[in-house]
Length: 78
Image (cartoon, rainbow, N blue to C red):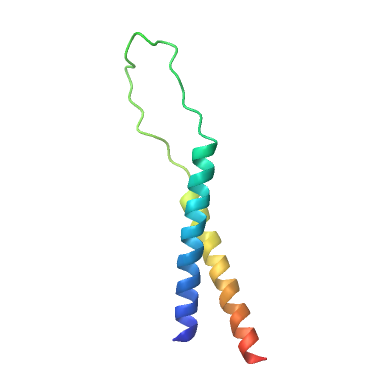
């Protein structure tokens, strides 16, 4: 049970930290697209784009949590 709590806690912590860092980076490097036709309204509406950042963050968090769990289990056996 202790191993499970360590894994879950480290996964949640890593996920939150990586989400905040990626949000800061995306906000920092965002450049809005200004349309050339300022007078007319666009005929198509864009609701955003999709990306794979949440998947990458989840996989990184999983790897970090696994490494932390193995590190603590090895240090307790010694």
